[in-house]
Length: 82
Image 1 (cartoon, rainbow, N blue to C red):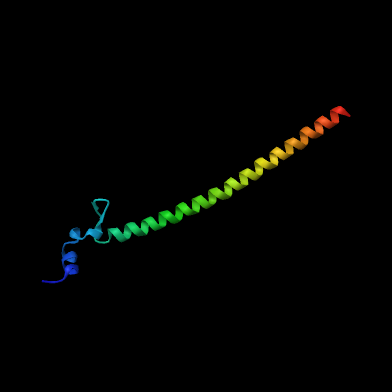
Image 2 (spheres, rainbow, N blue to C red):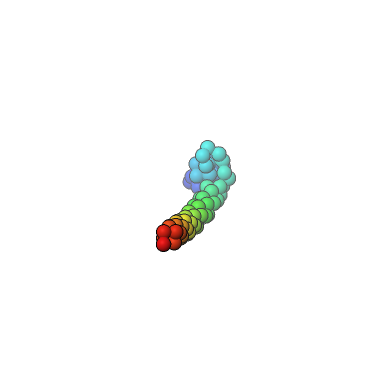
């Protein structure tokens, strides 16, 4: 009788590495799942970085708008009292 690898080649559904969350994924399913998960994680990281840049830009725009409004209000009040 051969070793375990021979058995798993003949009967891949018996190999626990081919099961993902209780579902048989085929002889290369676990590796395909890991590869897919790596791509998903990279995409999520990129989205998070993009969102952080957007949040920063939005904060700067809001701050500039608030500063502009304060300046305009100050000028209005000053001009009305002079």
